Length: 213
Length: 213
DNA sequence: TTGTCATCTGTCATCGACTGACATAAATTA
DNA sequence: TAATTTATGTCAGTCGATGACAGATGACAA
Image 1 (spheres, rainbow over the protein chains, first blue to last red):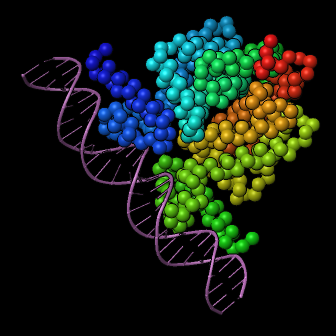
Image 2 (image 1 turned 120 degrees about the horizontal axis):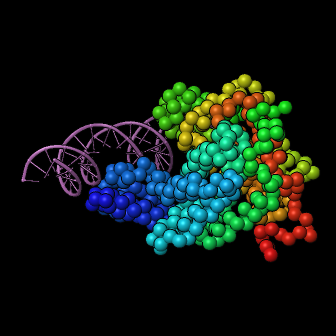
Image 3 (image 1 turned 90 degrees about the vertical axis):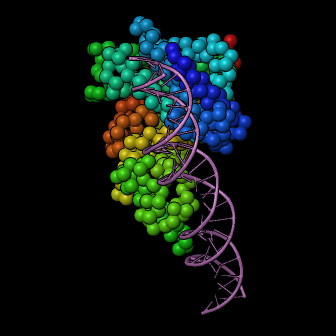
C-alpha cells in the first residue's frame, strides 16, 4: 500500500476522532465543520472530500457495523435456521467489538455516547439499519429458498432487527453489558416464538400470504 | 373559533399542500423553502413560524398518524391483550384513513409518495416512529402491570412496530392494499408467536430477564 | 367607534452545511 | 527528471435555519 493510501487513512481516522471528541464535549449541533477541520489542520473543503456530511462522519462506524453484520450473516453455515444465523451473526459482531484494541474500542464507545444523545443521529442510525435490513432480507430469503418479497423473510428479519435495536435503546454502551442484554432479549424471543417459525413452510401446507384461501 | 385561528389553520394547510405538491413534482431536495413560501404568498420567515424545518412540513401528517395510533391504543379496552390492542389500534387507524374525505385522503397519498421516494424523509419517519415507540411501550407496560424498562413490553411493541413498518416498506400507498398487507402480516405473526406470549408472566414462573436463575 | 394590547408577519442580517470551479501541491509512474 | 494522476486549498455561492426589529392585523374593553 502506497504512502498516499496510508496518508488518506490517517486523515480519515483523525477526522473521525476529532469529530467524536468535539461532538462529545460541545455537542453535535454546536460543533461546526470548521472546528473539526481546524483540529486536524485540513481545510473544511477537504472534510467534505472524506465525508458526505456532518452526519456521515458521526455514523461512519455505525455504517461499518452494519456492513460487518451482513458479512457475518453471509458466513454462517447453511445448516442454521435463518433466525439462528442472524442471532449468531450478532453475537460474532459483539465478540469482535469486545476483542478490538483500545483505540477502536474507545472510538466505538464515544460513537455510542454521541449517537444516543443526539436525536438526529439516532434517526440516521435508523436509516442505516433500515437500508441494511433490505440486504439481510435478501440473504434470509436466499437461505429459505423464498422470494425477498415474501412476508416470511421480512418478518424474520423484522423480529431480529427489533430485538437488536432494543439492545441499544438505552444508554448501554459497554459491549459486555450489551451482550448480556442481547442474550436476555434473545431468550425472551425464543420463549415467545413457536418452534420452527423461521423454517420454510412445508410443501404440503398452504402458502400463507402469497396465495391465501 | 376566531378569525385569527381559522386564518392560521388555512395558512398551515396551504403550506403543507404546496410543499407536498412541489416535493412530488420537483423532488424534496430540489424544492426550496422560498418556492413553498412563494406558492402560498407568505415570506420564507413565516414558513419557519409554522414548521420547524423543511422536514417538519413533509412529516407533519406522519406525526399526526403517530399521535393517533397512541390515542387509539389508549382507547382499547383493558380486556384485550397488549399485542391484540396494538393490532386493533392499527386497524382503527387504517379505517380512519379509509373514511377520510377526499382532501385529506389526497394529502395522505401525496405524503406517502414523497416520503417513500426520499431517503431523508424515510429516516425522519423512523425517528418519529421510534419516539412514539417509547410512549407505546409505556402504555403496554401499564396494561401488563409491568415496568416500562422490562424487556417484555419492549419486545411486544418492537414486534408490533416491525410488522407495522413492514406494511409501509414498499410502494403501498393505497389504504385498502395497505390494510390487506397488514392483515397478511398479522396472520403470519399470529402463526409464529406462542399463544399467550404477550400476557403477563404467571407469578409461579421465574421472572425471565430481570431476575434470572 | 376607538384605543390598547397581544399576536402575526415581513425585512434584514447572519450563521452553518454543503457544492462547484479552479489553481496548486504532492505522490506515482515512466 | 518529466509527465501524469490525485489530493488539497481557496473562493464564491446556494440553501436551510434563526434572532432582532418594525409594521400590520385581529381581539377586546371602554
